[in-house]
Length: 415
Image 1 (tube, rainbow, N blue to C red):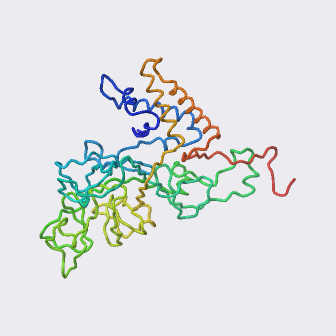
Image 2 (image 1 turned 180 degrees about the vertical axis):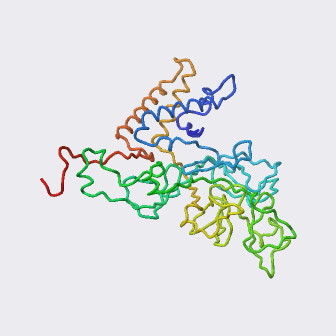
Image 3 (image 1 turned 180 degrees about the horizontal axis):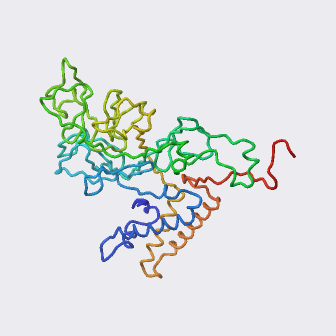
């Protein structure tokens, strides 16, 4: 859901919210989900002609490595946002690398990700990474600048558009004076660029075929398991205890042998947890001779990159992250809420008004109707340009430019 329970706190007390989503004495989160979908429809009806509302109204999920009750990795996209809100630490449980928990101390609840297999008993901070405070939000930044139909591009420029990365194959064509003068109406004046991925020949010529931008947890099955009789060289990657490890030592003359990853921190370092989370340290540098497969991570130029191509038989090797968009994309988690902060309270108030319709009409607080009316006014003001939204992306079109010529076709220097 776009809204999280925490978003309702400024507008309604938790017990009162619980009352209006309860069915037969049991809280029913599905009711809230249905109503929030209605609220999304209201927002879209006012703003979809001017803004990309679908880009804004995406789900806000608690960070997890897998889809609930499965071992299927969660895919993250540009704009994906997650909340840190893990289950409380239980001393009787056994935790392994990549597991999560919450710990409350002095009134502050901190969110942790485990970095040591077999962690149990009294909570020991040295076995965990602190990744934030409860309810912190993180989001995935756009990997490259958003495409702008009116901008000037040169060959090699990389732009992001509708979930894909595109590399400019053909520079922006400058409009000549005759192009403008020969146009009879605004709509006849061509835009300087073609939209990436629109299926036209012009688009393919200028932008080629896009590369989808997604990433998920590391697929450990692509690596061989560690063996105590294996001879490992520096840079070799193996799996052991649900973790990928990279050999820090080892040459042909003196290989890394019979040193168990996890017990030996001199010869082995963590290459990847079974999942990647916001703010978890990762500093394995990219190597031009390493055979990368899809999902592997590497640092290059102070940025974390994820390989989006590569198999055991056809690996991603020798392609430099940052210079090659077909094989690498940046993994840019940042702290903060990427939702529009003008639209957010409007969504809350529209949802609350609809939820209160479940109770007798005479018991609905007047403030709910007033807040709903104010939310609708906000949407109208955004649509009419009276209020500037916080981060909503304006809708781009290939309609003509802002020049109109009427009458006979105009010519240079002829009046």
